[in-house]
Image 1 (cartoon, rainbow, N blue to C red):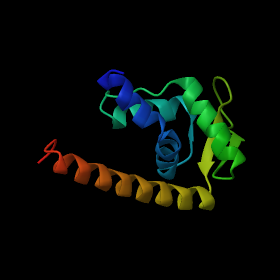
Image 2 (image 1 turned 135 degrees about the horizontal axis):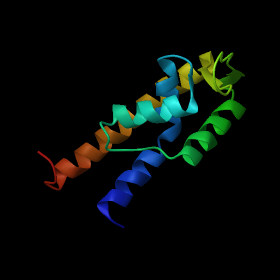
Image 3 (image 1 turned 180 degrees about the horizontal axis):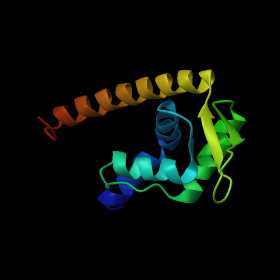
Length: 116
């Protein structure tokens, strides 16, 4: 496994939290979420469309996200996504889980001399 694969796996394991975080800033549609993730990572990570839509479908089935059709005056109608109150709670919990995991990993790597 290359470093790039390990990074991608780690990010993929947190896609739902990343999507919820994007939606916590306001309702959005697929392409806009993808663009925001790429910009937020400063180009280091580009989420793939299938990963995004799989995540949105999963989050919607769990009640963390709701979707609705926008009223576009020009061009195709877009499906927008909105984070629910339950989604806000899940985002807070996912963030806490990430911080705890990062703290444990940091401690373990410090013990081995991997980080200072």
